[in-house]
Image (cartoon, rainbow, N blue to C red):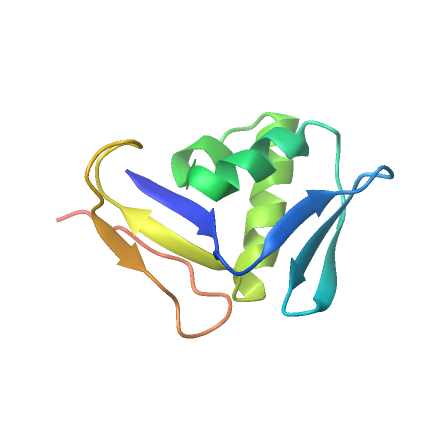
Length: 107
């Protein structure tokens, strides 16, 4: 399973007006206004949000995909590839460039 996780050094927060903000090293960066359901996805970004879960056509999936891409562009995500949550860790991909997006190819 391939998951996206927020970098450990940041804190993600949904403000009362729906804006999502990342706090890190004394700075704050806004990522836009989202529906209230995005709060659940922020929690999943702490433990590992399966990338397959944001490929759907539901509005909530599309909105989560927008947020995840914005975080990736800012270099605030890492990716984990391996067994489902709660099991032994697999591989951690810590991008060295902003906007990295992992690709799995068919063999």
